Image (tube, rainbow, N blue to C red):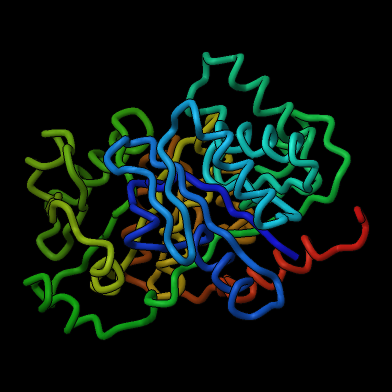
Length: 353
């Protein structure tokens, strides 16, 4: 079986060519190295920062008038049996167009509700749903997201949840050593939030939490990222570490007592599968998350790990109580190897042949 994985080069703010990671790397890597299938990776560089290039294991193309012809040439020359669309709605639309013309199978994978990125761009939503309808296989990072995709299209093929996972470098590390690396006081209790911070989605809760602990000298909130709002970066109880390179994130998570993952129950947050949850769990860090459909699914609806952001007082107190008291929870997460095996079993199915 010959498989082509089609993906944006820059996904979730990272360069998949120079710093491969996540489902976009480990699934095709496993299939290439541990099965009889042949894998071709094609990255579309919408940043327009690089010229098209060919490598032993992958291709990089810029979006131009020749893109579809170049992709069709690869599909035909390599006798591709199935095209896998990773990373975005327009990638799925492009993959569907190529698969239809080349008469090969199509798998569309989603890790977010892509329609929420452009809520008013209805023609794109229509084309995306049409691509999902055309697919032979449909995968998503959670059951709520997969249900949404199935609801929004008349899909008749095989579908499966392919969850997120932490990369292999996310493992438990010594807390004191990790704090020393970032020059953090080892005696204080740290609440960490290292995902994206949105003015409307999770910033208000972080600020209320910071106000709630204003008199606690033994507790501090740590955040990281670029271009954060001044209200966050100037608050006495919030320490902004600035941009942290991806290879240092495991140490940062391990330096915390609790890691927060905050999303809003809306067209984006309800279906997002924050990889930070999987990373914190793999580092054996305590985690508390806002209650959304997908997060409830990830955490098996364990009430001790879920926060109601509409009830600031109780949510804040739950965080403080979790700092003071150790509690047990059971959230079994899979490795990328497990997930890649499940993915390969799906596309190896004889059902559609």
